[in-house]
Image (tube, rainbow, N blue to C red; front, side, top):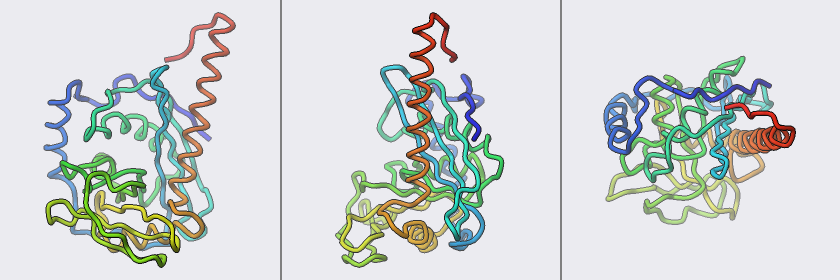
Length: 247
């Protein structure tokens, strides 16, 4: 598995302030594609991305894990580790995560046909969450699958796997609550880029044969946490021997 550094200057004109970040969101939001169905479930490859932080040490680790969409076997994985490039600001989380996620995706030996993010797409106060942002920057179809509904309204879906209910904001449907296991709390699916909501939910069901969250999320979460622990250990060891840590 490749582990690469997060670039110190991740992207040209990367925002340095909240005002600049919101301007970027406004500009990129117009590029979100909502009229494509997206690839069918159980075909090709699908990647999960996730991020882990150690704020005390100012470290971030991102993982990208590519699965065969039919068998759910891992076919490629990569990680990136480095410094945070943006402070934590509600509604602007993508600017904190994307540099590391892009570095991990770029390090994959096999690009995915679809990306599933542990977060939101259109279900975002500015209708441009991580899944949408990442989809626009990469051009890849993308889906957001969150474990909480953020501030949006929904009624509890039926208790049977596959049951759904609309996720709404002021009467606008921004996603769906989706039951992935009988009697288990739902997850919250929203379109990111180049995928329809019906297809997004079908993908999530195909990716949850045993657990509440997609296999993509489970595996990416485990990998980024492992890489972060290893980096913390490496730096602690280097400090103990008087060596200067990287980054």
